[in-house]
Image (tube, rainbow, N blue to C red; front, top):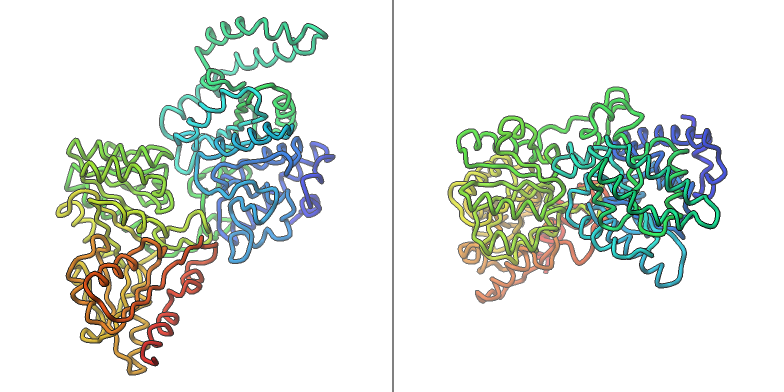
Length: 621
């Protein structure tokens, strides 16, 4: 691979004096590096391929880290990493101990915020720009936000606030590739399409402004004097531009793959005396035909063959199994609806979207709206499923309380990617959902370990339970269940020596590890029982009755300790007069870094051997 230019880029200063021809070649080398690395490590490919030239132009025009870049979501930051001294470590992308797939300030002074969720960049960039203003600094702040992130309400809260401050040196770059993760939906997408196809006004305005501003002495006065004329022209040609109505100076649309044009416009934007919104049009997956043809598939992808684009098959997984059974339920019950927040592919809803399009709703990256919308559907007699990654459900806490549980609305939250997720790291670990849902009344939580259990929980949620029901399941496949285990699908199950006075309690994916631990301890003539919680909220009184006479209880939880099921169970046992030993193993007050799921489980002492060591110690005391 020819990386003759790229390998010599040790900091952004190294591209300042490169010619545009060299910058184009650099962009080509960056794309080859991106494709090769993501093919080997997995990661976000299509989004990064789309912003190569844009990122090069940013570093050509601005002085990082004095000028601050804030990348929305952060999954399109790979080129930025390559240009800021991390080429030599780029092969470690998303691996344990390697560089993150998202911005990480501890990794580089060029990374401003550790971001992994959508629609936050304008708010945080505005805060930085105001702090620079208050300090008397003339440094710029640039927010790079994708068009998909504009479906999130926080972006509009920020835009509404920014427009009041004419002095902030803030440039918002709207990277418009007509995609978020799935195909963009809604009125915002249509609005941006309208802007892209209505260039006459913007070309006229930009040319007129440049001409007037270059007239000596009177140029700027003339420019200000014809503002009303420009407004009239704008209203005639286009009706309005909401960004300018909110106080921004709008520029664009600009070809996001033309470095020369980008640098010209960026330099012009630096000289405008108010916040700027620069509309850049890019192509997701640019430069890799397979990604251009299937940008959603290559948005976030595991290891793949660069010639065919095929990934290594990992067999069935919870997301796909959920989607299949939801289709089955919906075919028999016209009340069942499905809601996604721009994640139909990742959550297994593609088949449902095709077969039940009138009952499928992609609300965009707007999780809070999704919950309230589901509440409205439920009020109208529907049975809505909101299917969402655990990490993104965090954004809905207020709505889950106020608009769902308080209203006693019957809705089902399918919590995908619950527990450790692996290489996406701190921002995406699904370890907080149980703790915050535990605080909410009128809430039921199931934690299936197998596909069969998932199906039964979904059926119970639709036809037996009331109020808000969450069904949480992990990324990947079902856990390995012993042949001699027969589930009852009641609120809990017991495996092992039913009368043992040492109890290992757990739920979800790591039940499989607990079963293996039991067998290893059995070989050591140590008698234990494994208590598997199927319904983890509310904790049924029968669980307390079964456990309260145990000499020792060991609870293992793939989630945070503070507020988790283990703590809740300990309190209930204490209230019931439990006098034995209780040990809780869970994630203890930390954010969990990237690494494989298997390694992360092991590092948090939730693997089979850790269970054997911890539980076995009770017999040695």
